[in-house]
Image 1 (cartoon, rainbow, N blue to C red):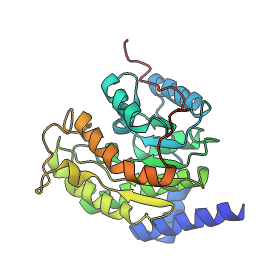
Image 2 (tube, rainbow, N blue to C red; image 1 turned 60 degrees about the vertical axis):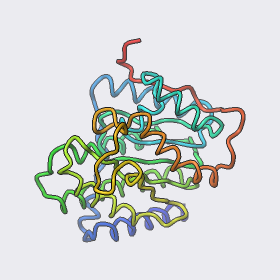
Image 3 (spheres, rainbow, N blue to C red; image 1 turned 120 degrees about the vertical axis):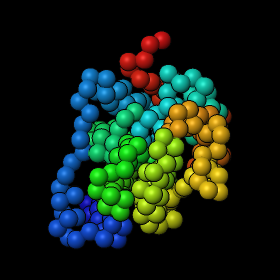
Length: 268
């Protein structure tokens, strides 16, 4: 219990440093809970992911929204093939769900999707749905601070439930559906990079590998100006590989991860 308390306190201090919050503001943020997606399809997906969390062995746990989900989902067979080629032997489980904001991912973590899993590495990417494709009404700086604070809270929830894991925190990817929001994304990535201590939390920003020198997306990197296409996922896998090899060792010949899931509403 003492170790858990120290971990919680450390996360609170890191978040305070990240966004410069007052004590009262921090108390309000940590009193809040995640928010459920209550549509039937999201609830079915949550049940799928709960079952996945209780099946097989997961040493490498991916958590996020649709950008994460599509990589290892049965309804994106080409991307799933690349997922298997990249992570087979590391016992990887994909716990992304499309459309989730940070508060929705937090709710899933608070409601069992990481309980008892004990991964060695967690790859976490969240926040693009909080940014959206329009400039936030509270402005670039306020929105960057607000969304960064939410990611800090989510990171804390992950660390509490997987205290032995190394978290690789991924910067939010570029959005070419409206380049005007890039200052918000850049501001968030700058802030959340400060959460990394190089040991229990590492920060990885692959955006320079996806864009030209002036910030424009390289051709073929996305399906729709937001979600990566196969070349984008290749960039992500290549960036992760040396860190995963360091943390998990060489990939084994066998893989004990649970079977992949997909969108419950997808037609087959």
